[in-house]
Structure formats: C-alpha cells, structure tokens
Amino acid sequence: MTDTALIARKAALAVLEAALARRGGLDEALAGQGRLTAQDRAFARALAMATLRHLGPIDRALDRLLAKEPPAPVRSLLRLGAAQAFWLDVPDFAAVDTTVELAPRPLRGLTNAVMRNLLRAGRPPMAPEDLAPPWLYARWRAAWGEAEAAAIAAAISEEPATDLTPKSPVDAALAAALEAEVLATGTLRTRRRGDVATWPGFADGRWWVQDAAASLPAQLLAARAGESALDLCAAPGGKTLQLAAAGAAVTALDRSASRLKRVGAALARTGLSAEVVAADAAAWPDARTFDAVLLDAPCSATGTFRRHPDVLWNARPGDIASLVGAQQALLAAAARRTAPGGRLVYSVCSLEREEGEDQARGFLAAHDDFALDPIAPGEAGAPERSLASQGVLRILPHHLPGGLDGFFIARFRRTGQSG
Ligand SMILES: C[S@@+](CC[C@H](N)C(=O)[O-])C[C@H]1O[C@@H](n2cnc3c(N)ncnc32)[C@H](O)[C@@H]1O
Image 1 (cartoon, rainbow, N blue to C red):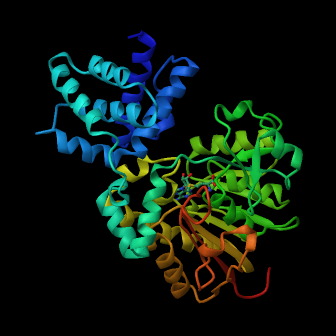
Image 2: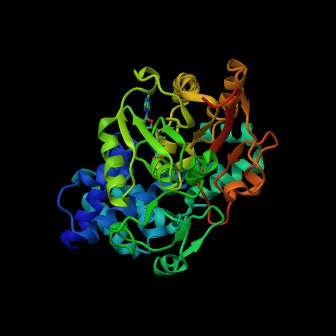
C-alpha cells in the first residue's frame, strides 16, 4: 500500500467526520487538510462526496453487519471503504487493505471482517426512503406526497453537473468551449471536472458558478438599468452579479464580513460593480428604499443536497423553527426597503414548506401594502412543473432532467406609486 493511497483516504476520513459533525462545509474541511497533491485532494473530495451521497444505504448495510456500534472512527472508515468499492471503482482488495490499515490496531480484525462481509453482500439497495434521514423523508412525504418524496430522495445519489451563469447572454462559442448545453434558464451546464478557475472564460470573468435554480430569483426580480436594487443577503454573491450584470445600481448587503470578501472578489473578476455593505439587514441604519429588493434568506438549505449532501445529515428538526423566525424578521426588513410600486423577491434553497409557502402566506397576511406578483408560465425558463397554482415557484430537485437545486421563490409588489 503506497503512502499516497493512505494520505488521500485519511484526508477523506477527516473531511467526512468534520462534515458530519457540523464543523463547516466539506470544502473548508478539505482546505484544512494541509498539503495534499492535487490528485489526492481530488480523490479525497470524490470519496467523501460518494460516501455522503450514499450514506443512508451504507449505514443500513453496516447496521446489519455490526452486532454493536464500533469505537470511532471505525464506522466512518467502513463507510469510506464501502463507497470506494461500490461507487468509485476501487478494486475490492485496495478498498479492504486501505480501510484496515487506517483502523486502530486493536480493531483491524473487526474492520477486515466487516469489510469482507460488506463486499460479499454486494452494493446495498438504494431504496429512496433510505437515502435521506428518516425524519426529513417523513417531512417530504407529508409535504409533497409519496411519489414526490421518492423522486426527491432518488436525486440524493446522483452526481450533478456544474452550472454556470454567463455574464451576458450566451455566445455559442463560449458554450462550445465549456462543452456546455444551454438550459432554458440561460444556464450553461457542463460535465467538465476539475478546477473551474482553469476553464475557458473564468479568468476574464465571463461566467460564475451558479445552480440553474439559484439563477431564477434575480432573473424574476428583473432589475433594469436605471433602477436601484438591494440584495439583502448577498454573500457569496451569485445573485448580486446577476443584478449588476442586468445594469441595475446594486447594493449588496450581508452581515458576514468574511463572506462579503467573496462578493468583492467576484465583482472584481467579472468587472461588475456594486456597493458592498456589511450589516445586519434588520438593523441597517440607512433610510433608502429600492425599486427591486432580493431576499435570498438563510435557510435549512435542504434543497442544495446535490452539491452539499452533508446538509441532510447535519440538519436538525429544531433548526427549521429557528430559521423561520429569522426569515420572518428579514422579510419585514425587506418590506421596509421596498419602494412604493417596487418588487420584492423572496427565495430559499429549502424543500421545507415552513420556510417557503408558509412564509409567503404569512408575509402577505402581515403586509397589506404588498400583493403577490404571480410568476408566469415559462418566465425566466423556470421548469413548468415547478410553477404552483398561486404563481410561486416550488422547485423540486427532479423537476429538470439532470436535476437542479430545490428552491422556493415568490415575487411581491408593493402597492402605490414608485417614489
Ligand atoms: C442563502 S445565503 C445567500 C446566498 C447569496 N444570495 C448568493 O446568491 O450567493 C444567506 C446569507 O444570509 C446572510 N445573513 C444571515 N442573516 C443575515 C442578516 N440578519 N442580515 C444580513 N445577512 C444575513 C448570511 O451571512 C448568508 O451569506
């Protein structure tokens, strides 16, 4: 066994454990792994991702084989071993040997025996209800019905393409250079792999990474040249870039100064401009109102599991209730910032009704100077099946072939004349 084979797997173990312990995102954990070759880093990332995408079925298979819970970190090592053998085309002997070598010495016999039994049993079945944590699956079934819940969960194991938003409407040459298809949303979707910073058009700021669904809130706000636009929860900035590219005078606000650095870097790379403000949206001491306000609120992010499968395993039922309170306060702040006659778009990358439909309904009940501005069929290229009868978008991850992030999007208009 080469050292490099073990180094990459050790990094994957640390990343998996950090991701499951809510110690930041997967990429932050990977960045904390010190000096790794590009190849080891890519393998560690792919292995941690494959493990998280199949965590439910792997754990069920392990539960059948383990008489009692083994001491840490054996379960995580076995999870990684399973992912290598079943989804990464690592030969069985290499998956077993590396897993055993990384186990604490007294537990190597047990690890070896469980790995061999796991491989003998074969790839675990991928029942949709096993792919998500049971409490989340139960929520989705209650909210969207059995068939939709199963389709959502089936998307958990799928590896997504990379979506890019072009700075200006697509030119065919850029799409071809990126080996991308152009979606109805205007998104460039590519199956390229590797460091996006080396792809054509990155250095000269011709696009940014943004899921097709995430590109919709700013498109639906439709800010134009001559208008003022406020992005109230702006970082890391994909939607700010869209609003600026549309020609609006943009104010990008976020309470996280560190995340705002990414907004600044993205604006610089793309040659776009916006006023960048570090402040709590609910307590921002500024009297201005805006023609177009975007509130892409902090949320459970359960809709982003295609690229962040760890969100599913880190979410807790109590999180949703506390996020709902924060979203309500931010919506009230967004309303105060919307000029008479102006538009307000509310979005969350969540699959949970409480953060979406219920918030929109509660907002209208509490703000009689706002009305729903219904989204039209086909507007901004949103999938037709995502358009709910009230004119809001409830995007589920299987609504587009190849998938897209789950989102809720509603557009409101403030009554009265624009000031
Ligand atoms: C879903 S993310 C926004 C993503 C961003 N719109 C984009 O497209 O890149 C939510 C953001 O809300 C910010 N946030 C949370 N609470 C806030 C508050 N009270 N005021 C301002 N920003 C807040 C977080 O720092 C985080 O960056």
